[in-house]
Amino acid sequence: MSVRGFRGELLLVAHDPRDRADAIRHEPDGLLIVEDGIVVARGPYADLAPLYPGVAIEPLPGLIVPGFIDAHIHYPQMDRIASHGAQLLDWLDRHIFPAEKAFADRAHADGVAAAFLTELLRNGTTSALVFATVHPQSVDALFDEAARRNMRIIAGKVLMDLGPEGLADTPQSGRAESEALIRRWHGHKRLGYAVTPRFALTSSDAQLADTGALLAAHPGVLLHTHLAENLGECAAVAERFPDAHDYLDVYDRFGLVGPRSIFAHGVHLSDRACTRIHESGAGIAVCPSSNLFLGSGFFDFGQADRHAVRLGLGTDVGAGTSFSLLSTAGLAYQAALARGDRLDPFRALYLATAGSADLLHIADRVGSLEPGQEADFVVLDTAATPLLARRTTGASLAERLFALQILGDDRAISRTYLLGDCVWDKHADR
Ligand code: GUN
Ligand code: ZN
Image: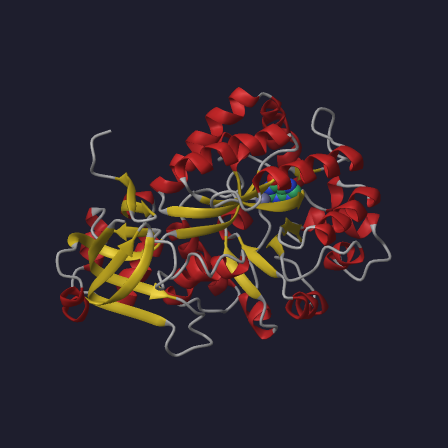
């Protein structure tokens, strides 16, 4: 049995600060006690340290926050980030589908999966909900590597029987491959499975119906897809499904809307859809950098909040322009302001940690460093760049946090810990 202590400035936002006055926990001189990778105590150093005599305590300079949780990202797209000149449907055809075809090759998938997980950790992201490709071996590659590193990762094989040649499954193969992957991976170590139809346009009615059946047969797994992201996409969905009330209703008709459903984007939603998302218990992964990059629009926080829609934060790399959930939080602030809403920096931190954890149904394990949770955390450096150092000197906690979100990125991640072990140290020789 190993017991260790970590001393430093702790900041946790376990609940949405809009809902609870006690959501924000700040210990200027805090202590985290970790036993076999699990947080067993947390509080002021002066109160807690005497209760753990003889325990080795490591001082951590910086702001300690829970590991970030990316609620929507595509690992096979990491090498197509920053691909120029197109909105969603065109961008998929020109840049993304050709890149995803390469994941038929397991060795290629292995190499990208390893680089991807390293990049997550460099950015302070310790958990993520991840799109693989249509190839089941792309999921094996990611899960094998995530299991080796003991990361909490949820992913799934993409279902897309209407995809382009070389990147299409069939309702039968998609179902059988998903079932096999669920059996192999769901609940293994820290891994979970998400049934992953790409979006309404790349699956036949038969495959969408089959996806609903798959979900019903496996109540523990998530549903992960895209929803109402880009106007061109929304127009094509409305044309193909003229009888549906709206885009969400397409998924609803096939049994894909429920408490374990995570929809990426939701930029263009009707009030009816928001009401239905709320009452079903589903939620949205907000992806502001991607929405800006593909010209998709600004997420409507005001509308989502009026309907009490559950939200998390996603980068959506490769349409997203950074792996950093710090800078993604900064863009969420700017997207909110573009529609007249103000995203508080503590709420942005909540969305990137406990909010995403709640959305992904892993809030009992990670997201707020509560006793009993897994000790995944990050040490942030508020002086990571000369400008950050100037802006944060003498500043309040809220100002420092906001500056990290507007000016920070991977440079502000000093260290990343998984289950109490340091797995990324910016200052270590590599
Ligand atoms: N909609 C369907 N596929 C994709 C994808 O790969 N990225 C994004 N951003 N939207 C999608
Ligand atoms: Zn996406």
